[in-house]
Length: 240
Image 1: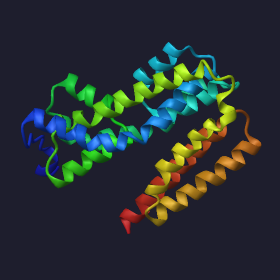
Image 2: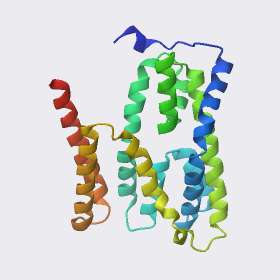
Image 3: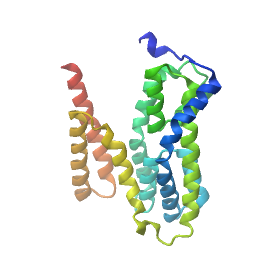
């Protein structure tokens, strides 16, 4: 392992780095608000209480998987299927955590756990950008997390409160937030041939599975097939 990857360098004053992380995150958090509000509305729509909906955001803090879980709660899917599906959706967080692990391993374990809990796509990208430009700084990393967590909880609470006063919020088309979230996460990552092929394969398997498989199994089958195909394609590319 290279020396650069083992550095946990604090490149500046911790307080200054923390506020730098907050300032870097704030513009991006604007995009989180509509999804947080929608998550709150959907929570009370599927018979969760506002407090249960807010607690879900506080404890899970993973927007895409929360949308999927809420959608599945409104259907016949059991808890096992919901847990397995959300686990598969969040598997990417394992890869994000693994890429940051060399820089975090010398930190105190409670701080590592706190930083790992707060990883979301946006804060991860900001932290990696800061790392590539300068060095890894846990204060900056933590500063990136705080705005996303606060905005997500606040917007979920607003949505949960609004949901109690709207008879059928999904009739407004807010349930489109889930596929819109996935598209917003997916499209910027289709940067090469492998990513595009895996995307097309996952879509084809999903459609075929939805037609012929019971319940929500098409989601899991498509995730597994896409992961396997992506791994094989990447391995072949690395070997060539």
